[in-house]
Amino acid sequence: MALIPTYVRRPSAILRIPQAIMQGMSASGFIRQMKGMGLSYRKSLMLSDWRTVGGIEAKKDRIQFVRRDRLPSASVMPDVTWEYGKEFIYKLNTWSRLRPGDELEERTVTLLSDKPLTSLEAEEQISEKWPSFEKYMKERLERVSIAAVYHRIDSPLEEQ
Image (cartoon, rainbow, N blue to C red; front, side):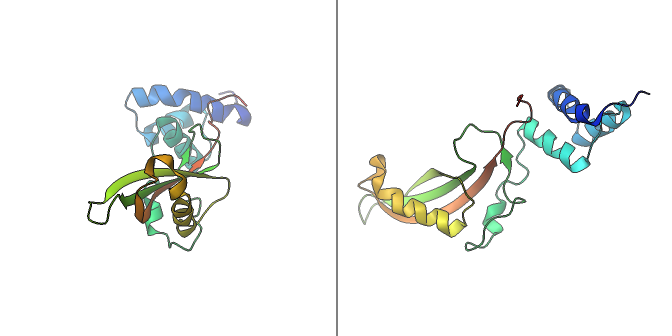
């Protein structure tokens, strides 16, 4: 068997992932197949590529178990290739009401940031920005809760 250069292995494997997913292959079966072809590389990186190409969020909802005054680690933030202008994307649930006797209205708000924020900082930023949101100007914000945090990365499939 001819040796395949290391710089070719990962791109070759990534290009084969969509077809493997369409065939219904599991991640471990795909890794075994790549090993047989001499295209394997570090297993954790192969699994990460599998989740990224397949759009699978393995770390979803883990932010709920992080203290509000702590910065979330990379193990809590799923890597996504969404087209946003900032590196960190925070999804927050908000509850507001128009008048004191009305029911609470629940909404989801997205906050973008260039630096990682604690849950508390993200909630405070939404509370500060709430009056400037044109659509919700008359509503009074009652409560804010963080739902998810994502880390934007460049797509491994796009040419650099």
